[in-house]
Image (cartoon, rainbow, N blue to C red; front, side):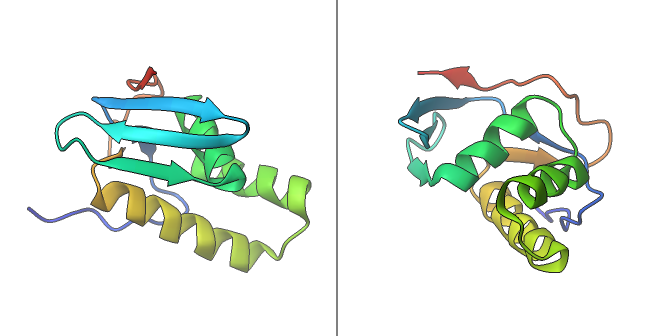
Length: 107
């Protein structure tokens, strides 16, 4: 199966079948189908929550710039890398007609 390459303009949503828990600002994600657990740091957790709220990656970058004052090109590059990693593990969906509703469940 070929995965869609992520760009800053890609529509992204949390995948179905992912349990999520915020523990003191850091996330634990459990992919129900594979049983794999993933941890996100505070910035990754912020990204996860914004994606779940229907924010575009461009809006996520804007929020990261406002919160952390990093260079836009670096923020975009790091965000795309994170979303690619999440997609590789089936934690997010990428592509046309991705709904903005969060399909993941809180633990």
